[in-house]
Image (cartoon, rainbow, N blue to C red; front, side):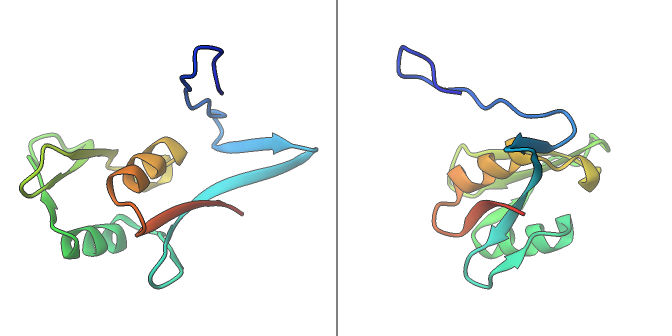
Amino acid sequence: MFKSNGTFRLVENPQGSWMQGGSTKRKVLVHLPTGEVVSSYGFLEQVLMSLGWERYYEGEPELFQLHKCNSIDLIFLLSDFTKFNSVYMYDIVVKNPNIFKVRDI
């Protein structure tokens, strides 16, 4: 949602889908180099580790956290992959430009 002052905020449907023209659309995170949809944290972690990310602070079992080496960037995800939604996806895209993209399915 864009505001009149030039800023924006992400508005997400709590069910993880959008209603547009009467059809339901879900978002997926796509790894651009391979074209694969991210379907697990295992795959996501493998890709992110190859980009210089590492697991960070495993003291919180309900959180999956990654830190980028030589950076202040952090990625926080809920450890339950079924709760992986577009807010988390866009955070990953912003922190890894040209590697990931969010698409409607």
